[in-house]
Image (tube, rainbow, N blue to C red; front, top):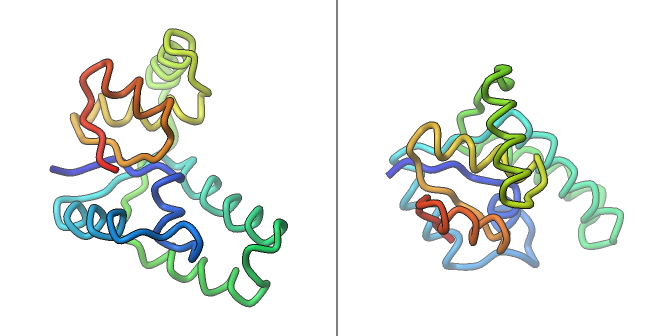
Length: 136
């Protein structure tokens, strides 16, 4: 099944100290069915890279290499939210005590009927509670 991939899951694909065989396997299995992410995903994964550098987990040279990897990932980005979608994101965030950043992934998975690829435990728990399949 196609899936929505959040930034926490994506980090396992490009940060050496977060990679896992399981994540790579899940990604490979899902990629052929299609992976999408909200427009916010680009900013979130870029921030993960910047913060990894700031915390001295990666070098400046590696930043460029990782950004190239990210650009090659077969992830289709959704356009910015419509007012109705933004309202549903806010409702999910308030109802389930999630950040709007996390709720945007869940709203997209619900709207498209896709699985959710996340390693965020609170987001995964909420997704499962409301019937969204979590891939991790």
